[in-house]
Image (cartoon, helix red, strand yellow):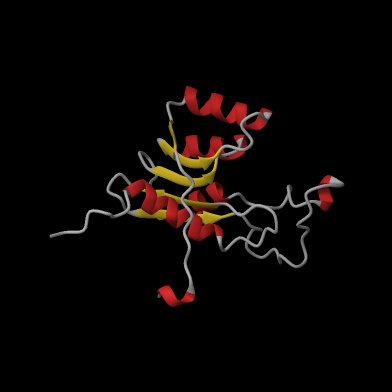
Length: 160
């Protein structure tokens, strides 16, 4: 008899987003994203970090202070990294992300043709950026699915 206690597709791909987030060197917020085709094939993956060629020991990780001395003008968000790292046309794909996308990432998601966002945390729901993001995504017909639980992927070196 087959096993029935398997992960759903949403749990599986959110787990992949969590695993990706573990690559982020951001000391405060680690976000991962996975883009998946309608056939359940991973076509893009990313996490928040500095662009290629920008040494993460040379650029700031601070959250407060003069804008140019913080991480904000330099960090590429997980969603954009996943889109830029994609291997195919993204029309009709889903993106799994541990934190609801900001307004800048929402624009890239819409322009790339991604039609579904599965996310967990919406901790910035009351900010102007997230409100703008939701307004654009709704207008563009992007489906928003918040997972009703926080799935944590725990992987130790003994698991593989």
